[in-house]
Length: 468
Image (cartoon, rainbow, N blue to C red; front, top):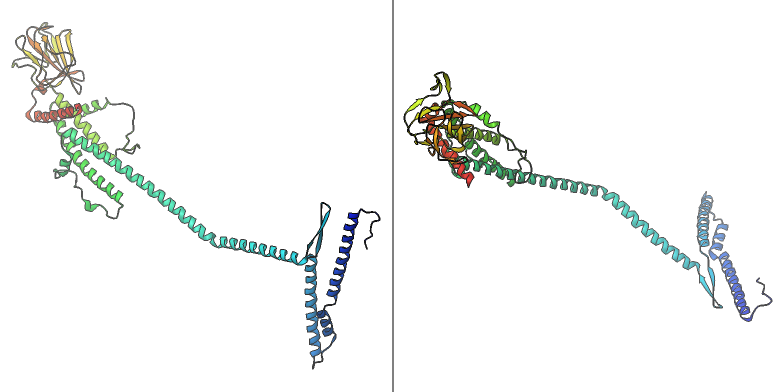
């Protein structure tokens, strides 16, 4: 029972009266619902049924009693949980006053139950979806791992394929570069068309240089590998032919040089000591440092040997230095014409009239024009490969230092200057600064001269190719 304040404003007294009436009606309503809840018919029916004891035969009474107790205990348990559940949701009245006006907001228990049920359903649906996702992830984890493994294997395979293609392209480019070098050697040193040389039959004694057989290439190889196999077979056959030809010419030149009384091995070693330069690795078309390979190393060595020996043959002064027949003094020991004492004569003397043309005995470059003690007027011609010819006792010069002269070209005139008893030519041949007997060069046999002519033709073609 709410006591009414003694003194209130009129508006407040009206609000207070409404609140008192609302509380009174709510109390009655709750009391009515409580009374109805206590006097439910089913409770009385249960009590009436539980109060009667049905009569059955034998132990029927006992069984019925136990079943009734079991039903009663279940009903009581359900009622207990129902009451606890209903206790969670009670009617609520909320008073809201705004600018002197009071409103009542009623939240019923049924509405609360509906909201709670909806929230529970939403939560249950979310939990079910989450559980389904987790289960799906667990079930598909192996599949995803297998797919990831396959993707990794595919990526690795693609990488290996890319590397393989790069290596194939690099090797093909290097083979093309080597083939170009081989063809350049054939054209430069032999003047032979590479295509025509490849079409020639094998020469006698060639070391199993078989022509290219496309049937020998494995058709199961990838196209890139087949291209490499064809290039390699073509290159090996061509290199074998070229190496055989180079060795054959080098052998002939070596024999000719030996017949001239020179040491071919010493000449090659001497020429090899005059090489050098900065180290620049060979790079193919792919721009990577590559080795030429054993076949190219052998070919390069054979080419160097052939070139040194043939150039030595060309440089040998086999031509007559003057068109005279009289030789007045030979090479070696003799009596000095002025003192009569024994002396070493380092050349050959050719007697002739003053002004007789003096000819270069071999192609070369004029390296000295002037006077030297005991020699008088002198012209020296450098023929390369360490070979130099000296022409002394001259009456005049027809060449200058640095002039390139051919074999048989006039370079001076015969005279009697210096330590001389009369008009003649003193002719010397020096090999690496040491005087050697010119006679063995001037009296070379026909076979040597033939090899020399071939060598002169090749060296001349190389010089013309380099000039272009």
